[in-house]
Image (tube, rainbow over all chains, first blue to last red):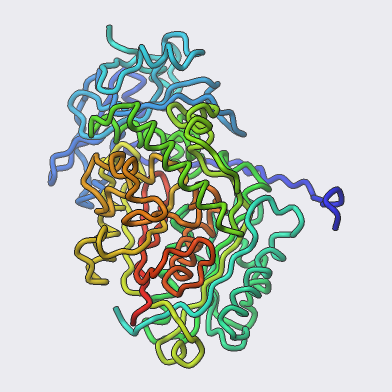
Length: 155
Length: 388
């Protein structure tokens, strides 16, 4: 076939889902409504994981001890995203980051925001690896991860 | 290790944008090439292993069933293995296990992808857990960029030095792809071209990133008895390693990447390799991003942690260097994901059997291939040798 003759069929697969949260995730989101960030501690390895787990991924033991962690933490790494794609939830540009909250042994994925994000070079002056950030709460709580609106740099 | 296992044939499509063929026809194309290379027919094949990325990449569920006939699986046992980007190494290991176990003598392994038919970044974003990470994810670039930032920060690699070394990785891979007739992107680039290309996810720029490719690869595994009968110069599998880690990005240390490190150590242990930089002749690393190639060089023990940029800048991993990495141009220049990890293996097979054409590393006898997948989550490594 000549190039201009390549033909396609348009197709689409849209399927709605209802994904069960389970107890641990449900409780975590309920705590967010109270503006508390809770992790779970493994009795065997003593690590505190945020987001919390129903079982420790390394020890395979049940995690049943809730621990409140700080609303401030350290930026372990971050990325400036200015790349749109189908189904994207957050409007570009935005900064995604791994934040290790005080008292936690894992990084929480969330946004760093609260300032002008349009210029990456200006963003780099504000968002620092190893820098401290703190949670800013959404006024209206929906029982999901965006009940924390974003994290903002601590001045 | 079970029985000795050899690769007796490989095949690749011309990779790139392939609107000229339907997905099943593209897959059949590669099967024909591999069978001819091995000098066998479908009648000789005892079983077929296939792998891809998530089905929504191409919008057909269980693609291996929809083109079962195109992969030659009618009347034969069929297996599907899927571990995201590391699929190509997973299916190779599956073929190896099948023959090594003695349950099959000849196994056909096929990896394929048509990345240009859907929205690849949207598909990859659904690999993230739906509760915590997905809303913030941005496909592969988001994850890999966070990893490279974490690595540079951890080892105090100055940003300029990291940038310079990553640009050299890009130039080297693009130079190499010029020698590879199957490569998707075949163009010369300069250090300045890389450093001035468009920002994708800072500090990663367009020429630090692989393309979205359509393509397929097939590799035929055989027992020692069959290989010696059929093939003049087989490549022997000397070691395989595969490791996974947690699905939440923040739960493990991606700057030292445990799954990549341990997968290589396992493969080295089986192959009896103590000093990979000296003992390996060539490596085909899964490098969709330039910075990641450097992290892998450290995980695989090619250089001390945090020093990959120094080794890159002094030319250790270039063609003609002490350990050439990705003489094919790598994943950076060709990435039909479900096939990519298998292409890495096929390229090392070509190298140790002296069939790599213009991209041949002179006298290569032992080589490492690799792939990674998931949310920086899985790594697979295979060692092949010209000697049994």
